[in-house]
Amino acid sequence: MNVEPGRISGARQLFRSDELVVRRVGGFGSAVCYVTFDSYTDNRTLGRPGFGEDYFRRRRIDAIHVLSRNNHWYQYPELPDALAAVAAATAGYDKVIAYGSSMGGFAALQYGAACKAQVGIALSPQYSVDPAIVPFDRRWAKDVARIAFRGDVSPPLPTQYIVYDPCDAYDLPHFELFAARSPTHGIAVPHGGHPVGGYLVETDMLGLLLESIESATLDPVGFTHELRHRRRRSGHYFFVLAQRVPAHRPRQKVALAAMAVQTHEHNPDYHSQLAAALDAAGDYAAAYEVHLRAIAMTADGLYPRHGLLLHHEMQGQYDPALTIADRLIADYPAVLWLPKVRVRLRRKRRHAHWLGRLAHSLYLDPLLDRLPG
Image (cartoon, rainbow, N blue to C red; front, side, top):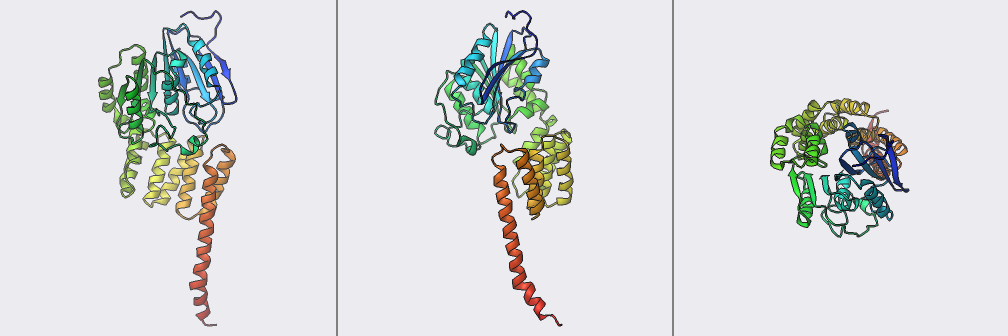
């Protein structure tokens, strides 16, 4: 393609509203341009990096990143204007690829054609989250309740690749809906979890996937075989297996969570899962130390700190749990479920206090009355 003279390899804003931003990063003169849509996030700012931004910058591949402030699956009145800005910016590229994960995967396949993409790549996408269309999926019910669905149906992309976990009770039917609508290359990743991106990254297969699709040389069967061969390199694989162990097998859950930590010891999510598994097994002392390690490993401490909150709650230690809840609410005011956690803890603390007073009046007071003197 022809590159405008003097274009630097920086970021340029193509569209912005209160809820959406479109940024172009590149000017590298690459033949391929990616259009990425960001995933579900608790970081409600539009200044965060785009999906895959650092990766495409390192490879010197032009990319246009679409980000939303809230988790509304891009259902905004101004969306057509944002997509039109993307389409104008993609003109002249040899190949345009729409790309995203989960919520971003939905948008990549739903709106990729409007961005003039010829190819779509989606990791664990939703076909829709509209309860009228997918009544089986209520994972994000609280967010979905706030969405005014646009009701538009975009033309499908000529070619689309979906990487998904066939063992996931939700992601499998989403894939089947996509496949029934238009020709779809499915890449099944058993126990890849939702989303499957972590598994692909840790096995060094995500870059290979993208590069093979760019060059139209992907062999889905060979790719799947190699991915399975590398699965033990992935902490995410053991993380998902641990998630799927039933509650009545706590020691098996601990063993798999420990394997995830051993495979990728610098991932705070894996440490948090191990700590929670130790809590479930009743090993609170060991769990406490692992919770603290998880918190120390990340600046974004929402989930590790919530794990420590649950650790205290399980032991009836409601005061320290409430202290953590109050701090989390102050640090993450946009996270809608945190105030409900505080309400639950206060209710449990009141109930525990009432039971304590009842036990005292029924058992301890009569006992004290019978003591001599």
